[in-house]
Amino acid sequence: MTTRLMALAMATAVAGVMSTPTAARAGDWSSTHTATIEQSAADLVGEIERVSHDIRYHLERLDGFTRHVGVSTATHVHHLHQAKALVNDSLRPAVVRLGELQSQLPAWKQASVDRMIEAAQMLAADLNSAILAKASSDGRLPVLNAEYRTHITNTLDHADALVSTADAAY
Image 1 (cartoon, rainbow, N blue to C red):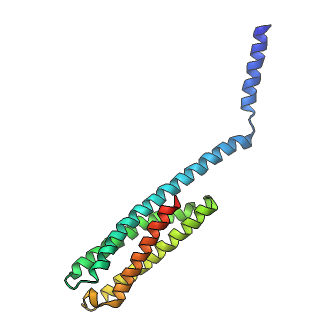
Image 2 (cartoon, rainbow, N blue to C red; image 1 turned 180 degrees about the vertical axis):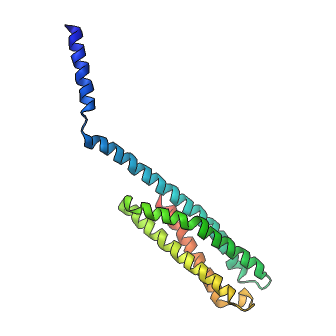
C-alpha cells in the first residue's frame, strides 16, 4: 500500500509540474528575452561609447590643429577620414541596431537612446559639413577657414555629448 501511495504522489507531482500555467512559463521566457534585449542594448551602448572616444580623439586633434599654421592639409585630411570611417563603419551600425531595440527597452532607457541617436546624427552632420568646408576651402589654411573651424568645434561638442550620454545610459 505504501508503494502505491508513493507512486500516486510522484504522479501528482509530475502532473503538477506539467500543468504549470502557460503564462508563468511564458513569463520566464519573456524575462529571459527582455534580459537578452537589455544586454544587447548595453553592449551596443558600450560600443557607441568606445567608438565615440575614438572619434573624439581625432576631433580633438583637428580642433588643436585649427589653431596652428604649421599643420599640413594632409594631416587634417587624415584625421577627417579616420573620423568619417569610424562614424560610417562603427558608429552608424551600432546606433541603427540600438534604435531597432529601443522600443523593447524601459522608458528611461528609451530616452537615453533618443539622446544618443540625436547626438550621433548631429555629429555625423557636422563632420560631413567640416569635410565639405575643407574640400571647398580653395587651398586656404585650416587656421584661416572659420567655417571649417566652427564645424570641427561643433562636431567635437557632439562627440563629447555622445560619450557622456552613452556613459550615463548604463
